[in-house]
Image (tube, rainbow over all chains, first blue to last red; front, side):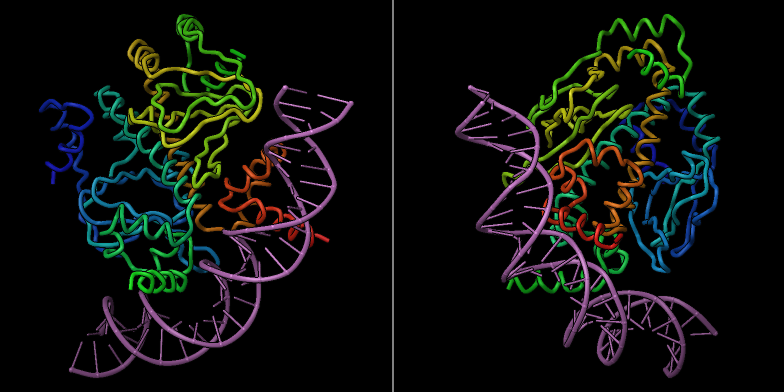
Length: 192
Length: 192
DNA sequence: GGTATTTCTTCACTTAAGTGAACGATTTAC
DNA sequence: GTAAATCGTTCACTTAAGTGAAGAAATACC
């Protein structure tokens, strides 16, 4: 598991053994059971997440209905808005599958970043990349129909469609579960 | 104009006079006329933008139609995906109004960041904030109807609706101009 | 292993967005 | 200053998403 992390980091910076040890000694590897709620709406928290294995999602409860807006899988990082803004959370975070996560606090971030400026640089680059990527995903969402969005997902993250319940996928695609069912039937129809 | 910039920066870090001078000497303040295309699809570029005054937008041309996906106004920063990834741009960037922009290259970023580590920190914090904020905007978009999205925009960026052509606003809201017209008429109807 | 719950699909109906066209109203260009 | 292009709205029609309900299938829970 540590290898997966250090392999990921090596894409951005090169770590000395001392630096690797500093990370390991933070003791932030966690096994989390499916269904575990990692953050609740209204709650304050300092925890950031990095998925080594498994899947977590963010969701809102609007008019009593769960609306899933994002899935984070292997090598995805999530620092909740409430951590950045030090405010109550707008959304829930829950574990979709049994997962292995890194769960770190902002304090750890501050400490590691000030001790090893390399980390500061990695975090900046990573954030910039994720921001530009997120904008691209948002653009694609805006410029396509629900059906196109589903087909795009089928191309880009085909495993997600298998791993995740349809009704969560539906709100992720910005539609109701019934519409997703219908849309899938429509696509099958077309193929034949 | 410089005051606006340094006032913005002061929210994140405190600059010495030397540092301020280093920025000014980069000579990156630009006046740009309405309609100017700052980046074209397929083009490579190293330019990042910061809006001091005015408005710029990103758009795609899909099936011969312009699809505007984002507007950047006063104090908004934009580093295009193509700059981050050093690849041809997926989208166009154009000036919506006569504007005053900071236009900087990645080389300048590297130089300033390595000379003044403070800047590295500011960029990291800023990117993290923008990423978390962007995700929130995306979530809101996914979980609301076109009509709700328009009403939200009316709340959050009322001036944008005045500043920007309706057909650009429509694709920004993920719909066709005709639908935006109809939706606005529907809202007026309800009020009376 | 069997019951309860959740999840997925289907159906009939409603509502709103997409489409293509038309027509002023603006804005732009020369 | 006038012609041309662009822009915003409206209309009639089509298509697809939202809604509420119901039943089948899968999953979770003792």
